[in-house]
Every structure is written in structure tokens, then in C-alpha cells.
Image (tube, rainbow, N blue to C red; front, top):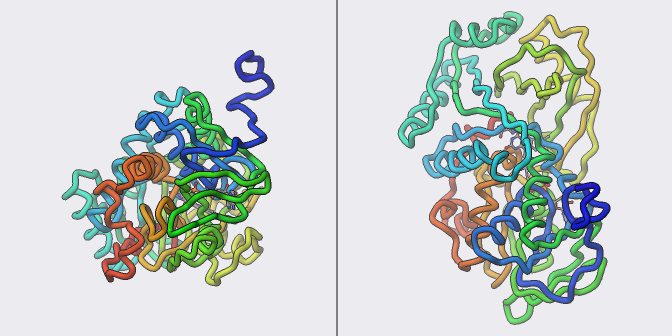
Length: 406
Ligand code: FAD
Ligand code: PYC
């Protein structure tokens, strides 16, 4: 599109700068979730008078900071069905968005180093199979065949006794997911504003009537908050309480290597997970930082802890350099499931609580939130994620399937 007459000077989508006075729907947050919701509002519901307001640049939040693991091997039947619907959309998404998302199915191993960890793997395998998702328990021999480079004894410290194997486990190019949805939404008439921050939400008589931004007031009766680690600040603007707390989650990559790691490996006990990107880097992460802080600083502690465990599994990597590290702000819920749907304020919709697990949900969250806004009613698929579950004591316990240590 660089030389297109239709979109002069833009590569992917039109560079809107000044919002109109009103929109049918305002979406706060130009991450994957906000952009996907905009795309499906236009595509599935014909609602195109939509503005996406992003305070930085699109994909610059957790979407562009995540380690891109896509899977559906969760613990609750509700979670497995939801994430499976997302995996199914992802599989054809490059074609739908006409953009190569580098979606690459690798197979995903959650390693168990103890018998009690194996119990959770069996539990997840059975729930997954029950709803038609391909996950099963494997022993050390099968793990060794899939990854002959790994020291299965983990330097004798924590021998691997088995794993949950999940065949559909995949990785994708994160920025492309944001850009693909942005371009798709833009082509359907949605307006995307970067460097545009929502500073307040105008609620009158329990109904949203507009938003204040650094570019002026915008009237609207429908606001979707899809801001990940900024959720508490947006909710404060409308007086909606959530149990979300913000913890940093860090990650890093090595210098590129010839491809050698075909699968995705996760060890909750050693607090490490790793995959190899399409350009050869090892993409690695670890547990959440153990304190609540609203910051994206990264620490030496993190790389030291992570790399020492990586070397337990892969001693031959001792001369490989870590070249970049970063952090994102994870919006954590008590049950490790998201918060999606309507709220006590009419016209204020919430897509939040994506913690360390939301990239894989980008397509299905966009689709279901678009439906929620268009019909003012959440579809059954996200009923278990409603905000009111915390008052109702009906939590959706996914802690054992969140993948990273906590
Ligand atoms: P974001 O991409 O963060 O977008 C929200 C946007 O809102 C931001 O761009 C922000 O600038 C904007 N915003 C905030 N406040 C305002 C405002 N007032 N006005 C306007 N705009 C505003 N998930 C997985 O499924 N698999 C993984 O492997 C994985 N790995 C992860 C690794 C790390 C290190 C991190 C940090 C997260 C990981 N996650 C993973 C989680 C995943 O990244 C997130 O859940 C997901 O990206 C959330 O997407 P989003 O669109 O909701 O949020
Ligand atoms: O949800 O699979 C996941 C994940 C891995 C690392 C961070 N999140």
C-alpha cells in the first residue's frame, strides 16, 4: 500500500489523526484484542462507525511483547472450548486477513518433573480429549524423540518423568496479528487513531455517553475497554471494580541459530518455556515477577534465573548470547481466566484479565466481544468469564493450565 492512491503514505491502514465528534462504538486499546473486535464488528455485524483509540502505536502493548504461544490445552471444559475456537480461527487467519502471520504448528510439551505434576497433566489430557482437543500424556522416551537435544535429567536436578503433549500447539508472528486485524478493520471502514489516549469516560445515569481524549471529547454510547495491563485505570474512570492486579511478565530472545528446536517446551517447575522463532531466535520466558507493579522495566534477576534453568535442560547453549529482554504488564485475575462481557455500567464492555495467556485468544475474543456489543448480550461461549462470577463465587479455575509459573 505504500504507493497506493487510496491510502497515500500508509503501508497498512489510513493514518487518521482527528477523530469525528461521535461514533457508534469507541474501542480503547489498539492491541490485538481491540483491533480484532473492531474487525469483527464491521465484518460480522455491519457496524463500521467505529474508532479504535490507541495511546501509543498499535501492537505496542502486550501484543507486541508476548512470546506468541497458541494452544487450547486448558483445564476447565469452558476454557478448552473457548481457546480451541481461537486456535481454529488462527489456522485460517493468514488467508482471511491476506497476510502471512507465520502461523506455525509445532506441538507443545508441558513437562512434568514430579508425580504430582503428572496428575495435573492427566487431568488436562482427559478434559481436552473429552471436548475433542488433541492432548495426551507421554513418557520420557517420546519427549526425547521429539527433542533429542534436551538433557532429560535436567542436569540431574529435576529429571523429567513425562509430559502433556498438545499437538495443535503453535506460534505466530505477533505484530502481524495486530497489523492484519488493523488493516482488515480499516478496509471495512473502521478508523484507527494512534497517539490518542482516553483520559476519562463520561457516564450519565448509569449509561456511557462519551469519552475524553487528548484529542478532545467523543460522543458514544458504547465503549469497549481492551487495554490489558491498564485495565484498573480505565475501570476507575467508570467506577467498575474488578479483582485484577498488575504483575510484570518478562521475556527474552537469544541470537539467531540454525533451526534445531521443532517443538514448544514448557516447564512450570523449572520456571522456563522456550520455542524457536521463524528467524532462529530462542524465545524464552519465565514466571511472573512476584510483586504488583505497573512498569515494563526488565531485570538482571530474570535473565540469570531463566538462563540457569535453560542450561539445566540444554547445557550446549552455554555460549549462546541473550540479545534482548523486555517486560509487559499482565492483568492477573484470581482464577487465571479472563474477564469478558457486559458490566454494571450500560454501554461499558470489558475485555480484560488476559494476564499471561491472551495472545492465543485474540481472534475469539475479538469475535465474541463484537457479538456482545452488537447484541448487547454475551454469547454462551464467554459466560464463564463474566465479571459477576467473582460476586457469584463461580470462578473458572485455570491456574493449573496458565503455563508460566506463578
Ligand atoms: P495489548 O496488546 O496490551 O493492547 C492494549 C493497548 O491499550 C496497548 O497498546 C495500550 O497502549 C493501550 N491503552 C492502554 N490505556 C489506554 C488509554 N487510556 N487510551 C488508549 N489506549 C490505551 N499470551 C499467550 O497467549 N501466549 C503467550 O506466549 C504469551 N506470552 C506472553 C509473554 C509476555 C512477556 C507477556 C507480557 C504476555 C504474554 N502473553 C501471552 C499475554 C498476551 O500478551 C496478552 O494477554 C495479550 O497480548 C493482550 O492483548 P490486548 O490486545 O488485550 O492488550
Ligand atoms: O499462555 O501459553 C501461554 C504462555 C506461555 C508463556 C506465556 N503465556
